[in-house]
Length: 170
Ligand code: ZN
Image (cartoon, rainbow, N blue to C red; front, side):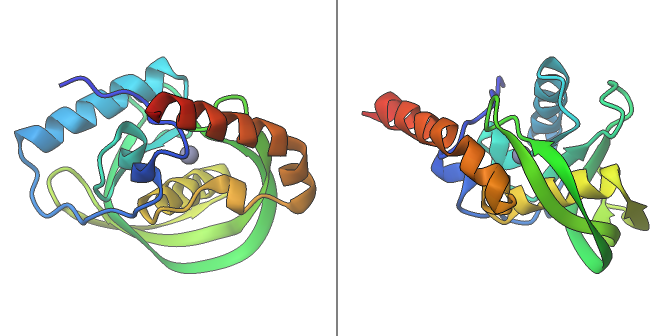
């Protein structure tokens, strides 16, 4: 299996995802490919739709260092508090960055690759990554949450990305 990064506005990024109910060899292979893609691209997070897989599966790696990543299945945010604006980019939007408001602190629940339940509180940058990746699982993308002045600055780049996708599928 070889998976590659999927660029916006591919429909797999916009359509939502199904829960993971079983961890089989195929799912482990998907996770392996996601790890490879994440670190090749020097990212800090990656959601399964970004490699074309419509499942509730994502990687979070605050340090960006291989081995530090957390495999997150079926995530939920139970509580949020505070808010903070910070800069974000996305591997599905190469070269596009902007300021996005996010909850500062979140209480999260998810399962690991053994389907064991985890519940914890995240704050700051790792909470931002978690929210960004979880949005991908719901078919939401960060350009729609950018502050208006940030969004205005990248409108041309967004139009270019859209045109490139249209050409590639024509
Ligand atoms: Zn993203």
